[in-house]
Image (cartoon, rainbow, N blue to C red; front, side, top):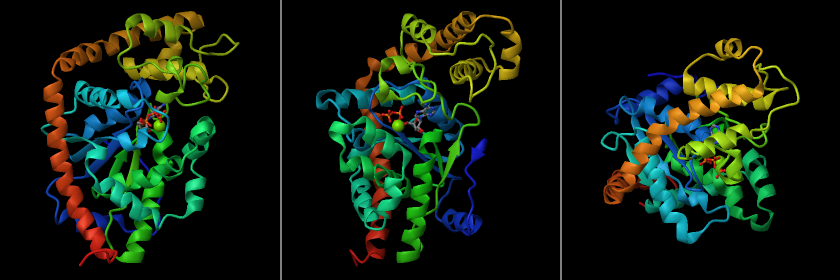
Length: 355
Ligand code: ATP
Ligand code: MG
């Protein structure tokens, strides 16, 4: 298994012991869980930070990949469009190369155990932990008109998603690392209060691409819910990609050099180019030496257009096969439910809610 950077913040837990305990009732290697919200168009940050990593695990490990619609409703959304966005996300999972024969792909709200476990975990989650979460601070600031309790409790639902499946590794972008750490804290607290129940999960970040920055404000991460111009969608037309990359915010200097702190816009373009081309950043700096920012933008745009071409083609194929896509989601739901029901039975018993 390829492991770029497992979050090894370690503590007193003996993970090896724990892993071997769980291996006794699991036939495959690691349990992997991750999810994406159906909030807007998936962008290249979601791809490099999350989906691309998932592909590394699908044949060797036991993977559960979710479309987290219950998370998506914590910010304003269009009820009429939600199901369409969910189908679109499933199509993207398939277009990116996830094999539904191997991995479980399902929609979060269809497996009710996620909300049940989330409530139970709320009762042991300290409020202080939730208030200090960066995403909560950012999203409540951005959603002043809809500053709801769901935004605060988001990481508890995410902990439920993860813990329900005895997840060991959560491949995510850097912004979600803090939430996975909280899931680990909650699991530890549950285990010490009610007895050994949950595996302690760890996040797994890509070595490069764990934080792709916004094209309009390169000091912030690229986000689906921050307006179209800030991201390149996996399905943007070549014209749109060129327009967005050519308008990307850079700086007032002239040198093409990777320097995240002082040149975040140029560094972001270099990262995107490096990820799509497979060339190391050092080589790109040499290739672009003495060239203008415009020249860099052109080469990044053309490489992005070419690299995303297969996504656009695959998406067209799957769009005409919506019955097939729905069948995959139904099968995924059945498989996920079996795991979730078993775990919830154990949790209820441990908490004295059931004999
Ligand atoms: P939203 O703005 O609605 O929160 P998002 O773009 O942050 O959308 P999510 O669905 O919240 O996307 O996250 C899906 C996955 O993509 C997570 O693993 C997250 O860490 C990762 N991710 C999100 N943005 C980036 C980014 N800019 N770079 C790398 N990974 C990212
Ligand atoms: Mg997000």
